[in-house]
Image 1 (spheres, rainbow, N blue to C red):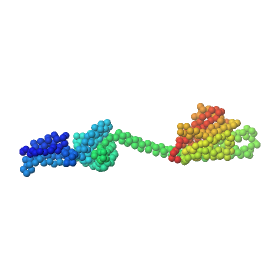
Image 2: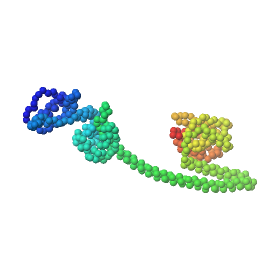
Image 3: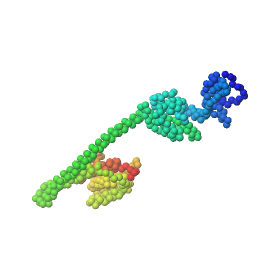
Image 4: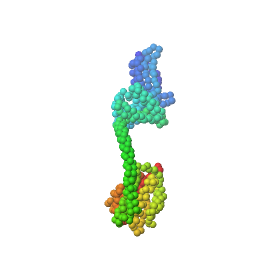
Length: 453
């Protein structure tokens, strides 16, 4: 092996890489014919350093060559990417180590593994040592690489992609993220894979539970449909079968009253009047009970209800029906409400009728219809100065056929307030009362707002 010719030359290597280049050259000189790989920075003619990677082969001993032959390629861009990643590598390692059940990988533009961190790597059947520094297509199964190749291409174009998959029995959510430089150019790909198996198992359990609940709901719905059908049949039976004998009782009582009244003494006439009154009351009870049962099944038609107009309509109808409206009735301004117009009309009918009935014994009956606002809610009320009631029995007010006064004191069947409570409950509101014996009562109700109306 001959000596390398010596002449005056300028060192073109970057100072940081000079010793490495000298070592590679010495190694090549010592091993004639054997390519020696090198990597380093060299001064470009434009004045900046360029990274080169290649091989240096000593062919000084070959006749006709007598030279050191170099093959190289420019890897400046790749080295710049690596330097950027090295600077941020500590951050990525910290992130990966702080998220159990995750894996973070960095790839260059050739899909080469530059960083692998996270406990999920080995769980998915991979080894960091076998992956690091290699291209994904060389170390992954062909079908696995084919599954992510399209995502890699899209990410290099600047797109961020999220996908769900299953691997090695784990449910995985993967995020493919482009890493961009200050010029908004993608220089690397980051993938973040997170084990969501527990979450997916919980979702599958919930889905299975929902399917079971849906089946039970369908079964219960069918049962309720059958019950409603039976209730309708029962209502028809009540309406038809009970009314018929009542009509007969009332009819014969009227015949006795009209044709044979003179044959009856005072006790007999009284008994006949009791029979007729009881038959009529029984008919009213049947009507109220049927009305109450149908109320829960009727379809609601929600509209914006003008409560002032509704109250005035109720007052007119009560007056036309022969009910005396007290001069002391005061109707304050009411705000509109969301609800079924016909059902809310029934509420006002029942509450106003009750106020008139229970204050009727007063010399100067006073009734106030109004509303107030509290906690952003509209509270409607009907107030009277009538008989009132003992608040310890307030829980019985809204029960069917519940009465807090003796039957002879005030007329009625005890269904009116139960109807009010059911109507307000169907609207999603609430109803309550405050009272004192012989000092009157106030009935309140609220209705929720429906902004879609």
